[in-house]
Amino acid sequence: MTANEIKLDRSLIRELPVVYEGGEPTAVLIDIKVFDLLLERLEELEDRELFNDPKVIAHLRKAREDHLAGRITSHADLIRELGLGGLRAATSLAESGIIC
Image 1 (tube, rainbow, N blue to C red):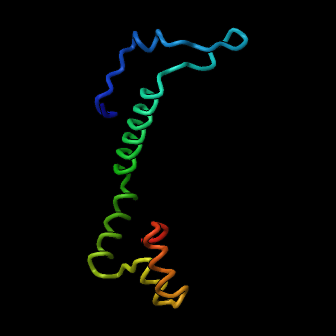
Image 2 (tube, rainbow, N blue to C red; image 1 turned 180 degrees about the vertical axis):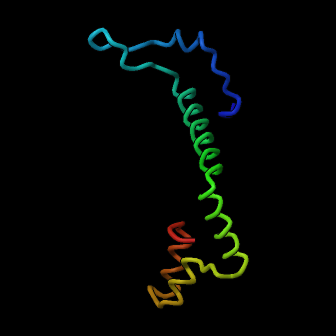
Image 3 (tube, helix red, strand yellow; image 1 turned 135 degrees about the horizontal axis):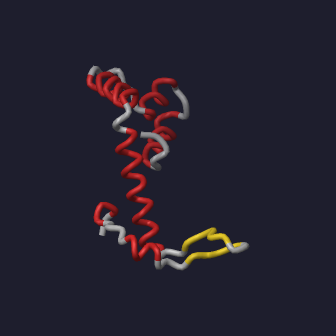
């Protein structure tokens, strides 16, 4: 099941165990799988909101233009060009995922 497949049953939500402190509800206990799916869904919604931001879209378009025009240099190439750490270090960093 993916986050998109979550259908929240409001009556089920009302039946979740509630933790009270001083007579006030302070927390709800939910299954960890449901929690993980809810976090996934929240991230999807945040991404959707982010990609509807005109400033973000403009920056992405500019980055794509720079990439297509060859104005982008990988971290490994930059390290080699600047003579920082030598090829072995740059390759090691790239292989470890620290740089791309």
